[in-house]
Length: 391
Ligand SMILES: [Zn+2]
Image (cartoon, rainbow, N blue to C red; front, side, top):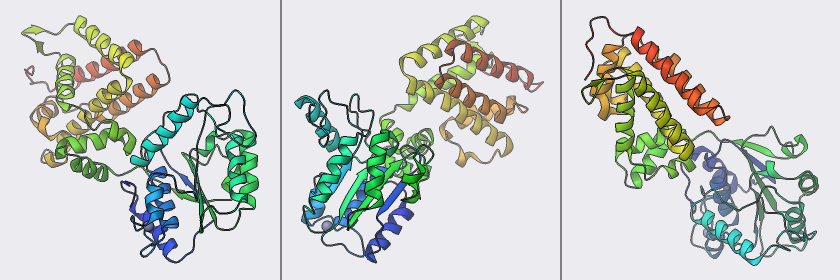
């Protein structure tokens, strides 16, 4: 692959085989969750189709065509994505009326994408795919091929097209110039006009498996345990995993152990835990949620991982190798022993719901106070009768 691709081997293989047999379709729609590799795949498929010297359908990575595509400036590769609206829009040129600074920024963002196909381009006010982008494309296609061979059009997040852009796109999809292949990406087919979707062969992307992301992180120098934790936290989203590459998990461990110590009602620095401590805990988490939402989500996910690990340990005490946090196995085992009747699944769902509520702008301190009180109540009621306080 000339661009990085994590997982999704079957889809890549399918396109390699199609290219090898010269059975390339005219329009594909890649659907799947964020970070599953739709754009990365589209860029690699473009390389297969444009390569001047493919081997069994795979891009060689060395010919002039591959070299140009690597920087996303092959003349037969047309990349369309959302752009800011200019104050003096032109019919056929989406860049007309944009300031040089803006154009420079857009070029730099595209270059970052060429270096990391999972990069999320950040172009201010780029909310829509504009009709001028589609008209410009039509004009270029009508002028004939810049270079001999196929023309590849990648339209990223096609669901951002305006109504006018959709109808212009539909016309060109209905009568595509010979030798063109469209690759559209979207998280889901649902928001797209059926007329667009029905012109395309749909290719579905699943979240990337944990093991693939973990292998990638090991390749980036993380140890196996941390690599797997990053993979689990990312939920199959390579973009998220890449954001977590540098995460220091020792802070998270300390935080989570403190969290349970307070909820379990044992001592902090030789004094008993009180309701005031629960209140402080709520305040602390609320502040993190406000200051750094992604760190907050990580903390809550680690609470879910803890519950998953303690559940696994209560049902299969010998399953240590399958723990998400094996280095905490001593604490996890103790929790499982002290709270044999703890409703792990129910509480995992409660944490998930809290995450959902907060992402939908629920009042954070109240959601968290509810969650923490619920957890504490179940801890008190599921405690083994002969148990001593944990240290
Ligand atoms: Zn090549």
